[in-house]
Length: 280
Ligand SMILES: CC(C)=CCC/C(C)=C/CC/C(C)=C/COP(=O)(O)OP(=O)(O)O
Image 1 (cartoon, rainbow, N blue to C red):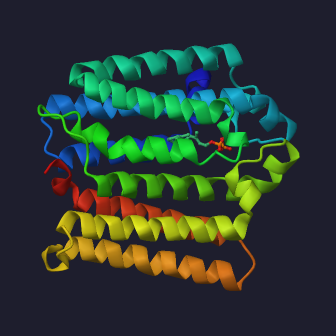
Image 2 (image 1 turned 120 degrees about the vertical axis):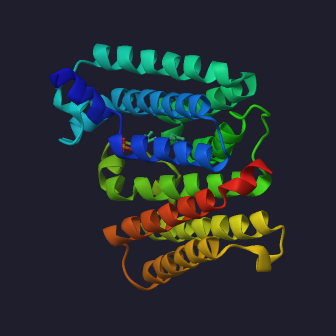
């Protein structure tokens, strides 16, 4: 039980659940039948487990060096061997569950996972650290549309919204860890840009993503945008705008991280609210 709890704690439970729920809601929005929806959600969940645990396994020595007590592997609650075993099994399960949904979905999910594992394996410490987030989250809406009986890639605006969401997640996820990372030599793009520029870029990306959804779903005719989509977009615009102003006029603080996360969640909700347009 202790091992299972430690492994679960190493999956990055928050992002694992959020990404799984996002896949599920996009699947519902594009009208997948129950068995397809179930496979999609379980495959994405297993993939997230593999990404999260392998990330902590690769970071264990660094996390121990800076005394990260929030990391079960750094605390020694579970062995590295068990972690690698769990991450490998989860990866295989993710691919095996994707296969019945068709080879296109399998290939897209393999790209999503390969890009995320490449981040864990070293890209996180380079100036290209944002690329896996652009690639993985860019293709993410297509995991739902490619799971349909008539598989299609999601439209361009959904790729833009996904990539914007991924960029914002990366640029802000590392903000609270900037000092620890500097001590252990992790220098990704946000470390090079600094907290203020990263927060402004993240909020701008979310805003651009919101505009892409608004224009994309309506084909440029804003009169056809539903009231729900407008409300989510208004939320995105207000929170992102506030974040940008706050980052520019006051010293960077943890509140920026929370603000960008709220704006990113509103963008995800806007994307899901416009989900029916994904399958058109
Ligand atoms: C990479 C990628 C495209 C993932 C897509 C899905 C996603 C958001 C997974 C969350 C787990 C993760 C790799 C967090 C970043 O770790 P970190 O090492 O930067 O930070 P940490 O200190 O929280 O582990």
